[in-house]
Image (cartoon, rainbow, N blue to C red; front, side, top):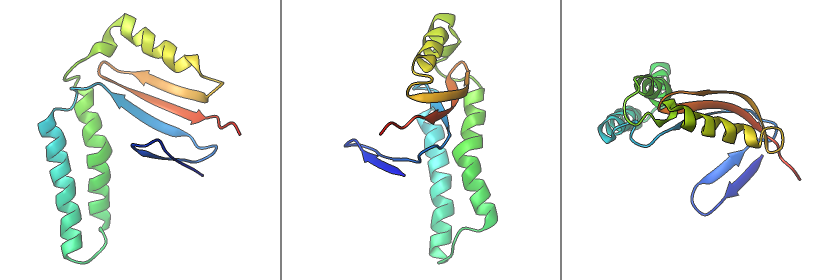
Length: 127
C-alpha cells in the first residue's frame, strides 16, 4: 500500500489494484443537487450517531445509493455542459487516456458520455 500526500488531498494506492473512476464536467451537478445529497447523507449519519449505534444495513445501502447511483442517474440525464459529445473533444479525451496506456497504467475499459466519463484502469507502479 502506498500513501502519498501532494500537499492537498491524500492518496491511498494499493499495488496491483484496479480502479473504477468517474470524471464529470463542471456544471453537470448543480450546487442544489450536491447540497441535497450532502444533507441527506449527513442526516443519516447524525441519526445513527445520536442513537449511539452503527449504521444499519438499510442505511448503508442508502448511503451507497446516494454516493453512486443517484449521482450517476443525474449525470445520465445529460444536464449541464456536454462538451464530451463533441467529436473533437471526445477524441482528445480518448487519445489522452490511451497515451500512457501500457506505460503508466493498463486501461481496461472507458466510456465517454456527453458530460462525464467512466474509466477502469490499473496503475503500473515502478520502483
